[in-house]
Amino acid sequence: MARVLEWKKHYRVIHSRFPPINLFDEDREGDALLLAELEGETSDRLTRWNEFIREDDYRNGSGWGAVMAAFCYTNNGRFSIEDRLGAYYCADSDITAIAEWSYHAAKVWRDIRYTDEASATVRCLVGSLTEPLVDARKNSRVHKKTDYSTSQAFALKHYQAQDFGILYRSLRNPGGECAALLRPCATTPVKQGVHYSITWDGSKFTQYALVGPFKPLP
Image 1 (cartoon, rainbow, N blue to C red):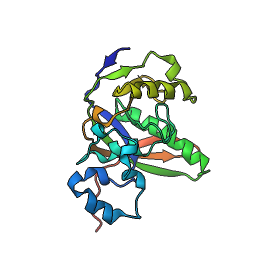
Image 2: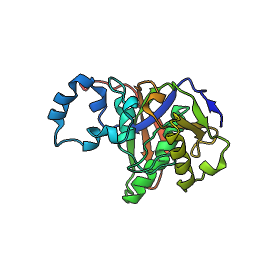
Image 3: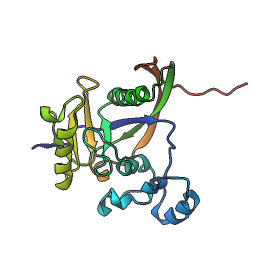
Image 4: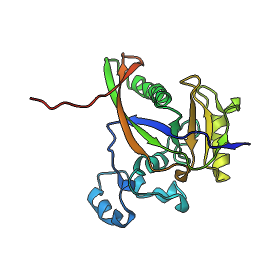
């Protein structure tokens, strides 16, 4: 199966309620002090990273927090398996990333029956691919809309083969592309980009807007 490295940059959006800095954004030499400060306040998954990430793939320092957290906080997704296989999901553009986030976040908001009109603020994380990915864009079996069993088995097989990630088509933004990075070293550290506000109409996300610069109050 072909390995490709096509994108210059990749994009991911996450809810801005998550803190911009965590354990992996700190230098490793300062981990002990930081852990003492955070004891009892954060998930022990951050301290048990070696249960989810190979030793050689450990990364830390500025820009690594969001990447490493994606592998420690695993959940069931197209190419990820809860408590077994993590993935850093990203897209070829900010628009595709917003469409993907909106689809998956809407499922959560509907599950908790949040029907009020509201908006969510997300921030965009930007990085660059450093390794070739398995090209699965023509593999229809991994592009099922809601059944992830085949794609999860596909990902596990390539993770065990120590592949760096999988390139696939976006099902939420036709024409867009996504990647599931299976190892942190498949990307550069990410940088925080712009913020977006995404409108919720009570049942789905409907529109988005770039959040502009703040102005001081009088």
